[in-house]
Amino acid sequence: MAPQHTPDLPVLGSRKPSHRERVADALRAALIAGELRPGEVYSAPGLATRFGVSATPVREAMLDLAKEGLVDTVPNKGFRVTAVSERQLDEFTHIRALIEIPTTAELARTADPVALEALRPVAREIVTSAAAGDLIAYVEADLRFHLGLLALAGNGHLVDVVRDLRRRSRLYGLTALVEQGRLEASAEEHLEILDALLARDEEAVRAVMARHLGHVRGLWAAP
Image (cartoon, rainbow, N blue to C red; front, side, top):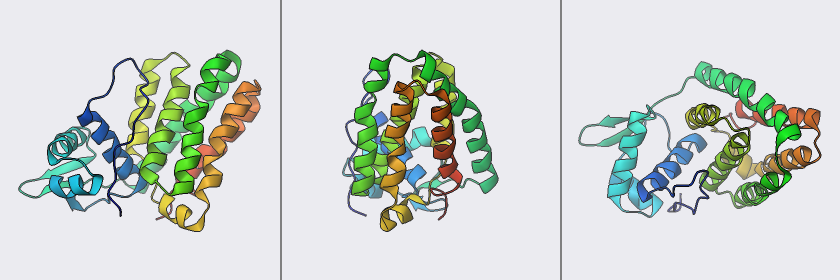
C-alpha cells in the first residue's frame, strides 16, 4: 500500500486535535477498513513509514489504541491488532442500529437545515474518497458525517457511545468493493440521508439509515 498521510480533519468540538490524536484517528480508520489486520504485529517505525509521519506520534497513538483495547503491546516488537469476533460485530451493529436509526430519523423534525447543509461537504468527501479508493479517508469522513449528524441531537453521551462502537467495528469488505467499483454507490447514500432529512421525510431517513447500516454486516463485511 502506498504511504498514507493523516488528512485535515474538521473538528466536531471547539478544540483542535493534536498531531498524536490525528495519527491515532488515521490508525483507527486503518483498523476499521482492514488495512491493519488482526493478529499481525506492527512496529511503530514501520507504521510511521507507511503513514508518512515520524515514529514518535505513531508510538504514542498506538499506546492510546492499546488503552482502548484495539491493539496489544508486544514487548520489543510493536503492537498486535486485537481480533473482533463475528458475534461481537453483530452486537456492535445491533446497538448502533438501535441508537442511530431513530436518532437520525428524529432529526428530520428537529434539525436546523443550515446545520444539515454544513455536513454536505463531508458527505461529498465520502463519495470522493470512495471513488479514489482511499479507504482511510473514507472511514474517517464517514465517522465525521455520522457523528456530526448525531451531535445535532444534543446528546454528547450518545455520540461518545456510537463513536466507540464505530471504532470497534471492522469493514473488511471495503477493499473488494473498491476493486469492483461498487463502493461509490454506497457512499452516495450519505447524500441521500441528507436530502431526506432536509425534505423532513422521517420515514425515508429511517429507511435509508436501515439500509445503510445493513451494509456493515453485509456489503462492507465480507473479507
